[in-house]
Image 1 (cartoon, rainbow, N blue to C red):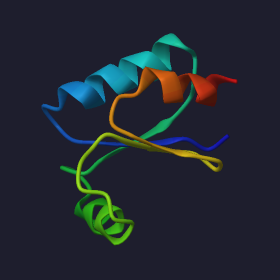
Image 2 (cartoon, rainbow, N blue to C red):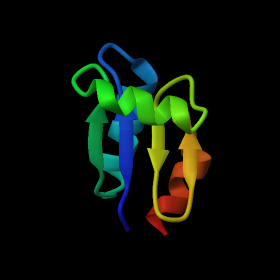
Image 3 (cartoon, rainbow, N blue to C red):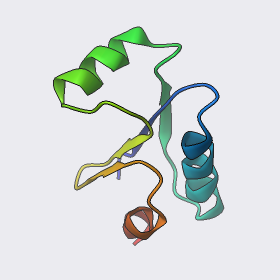
Image 4 (cartoon, helix red, strand yellow):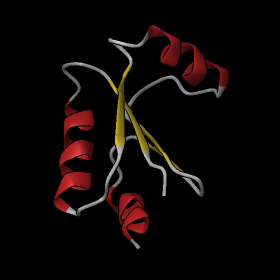
Length: 74
């Protein structure tokens, strides 16, 4: 499964989401919007206004939502 985590610097929810994914052995690619401004444009095109955004082939999770993130592990 191809999981991407869109995050930014100094974002507590982003840190919590990264920790949750790592602790549950869910591999992911992190895209930091502070380092990759083109990612901001992509997120805005999709209608997102905040991070973290976690996307996979099957689902998108907005914010730190352990209940939804658990589904990525299965």
